[in-house]
Length: 367
Image (cartoon, rainbow, N blue to C red; front, side, top):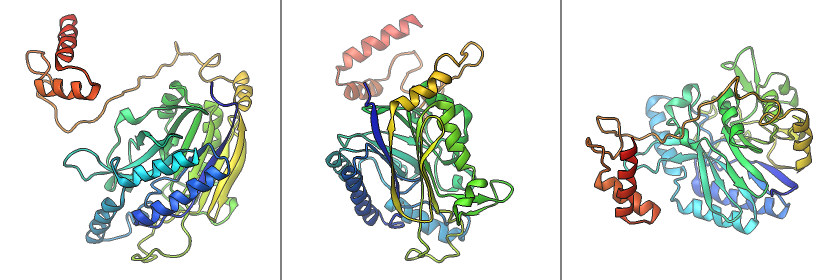
């Protein structure tokens, strides 16, 4: 059974912008600090590693290209030594980590970057990742679209953990999907906190806590917690007023990194934050009874839902760059599994090729 009490943390800290090694060192220090403070789950902001591209839309195409190459070189890859180091530090600190990162594709031949969350367990294992399904507005020139299969939750000793990135937290069906998967603790990552001036396309960096009156993040996170009865750790990016080396202030025209992190219970009550205008490690203690009490009144996965009235279809597809003309992957025109695919499946599942082919034939016979 999950722990009856636990501590959530939001690492609202400034990355060493566009610097993988510098950001890695700083990340490790904060994971260690979180461990010393008894944090069970530590969440980092959207693309914290090695910083959100606040230069999007503010630079020329040649400059954009140079910055994209720089971002490729400083993003995390699942097989990076930096990922292994982060896992080791998480294990030593005994902390679950949800790390917002620019992720370099692990598909052979690709240099595409994704907006991702990496999930590390207490043992330091990278147990999964979520890629933002649809980059927002100009972000589509930066990141690729995520696989539907990355929309999932993870079993931990403090509860079922899931997460979404920025405006995904406004997407009704994505929220419903995580709820249907049993999500209990939600990691929400954002690129900052802002004042809205009439619509989402007209916003500016928050200067004071009064920004809660217009910033969509504040009501969205409270509502997410209440409507799903989840504990929410919302972590927002922070950048100081110092312009990072190699940039001009004008180039970082979309810099909304004012922080704004919050920790919220399943009744939508903000127990810590929003922390605005400063770097910090935000923490709060929670009890599972806070969730039980809310669910006793309003249970989105139990007595208050009607699956017969409204249902949801969830895809677990992984997007692939190539398919055969019949629409299949690794299946020949005669319906038999290709030798190459059989070999790959045998290696992945540590079984004989003969066993894979026998199962494939049995499935084909039943179709």
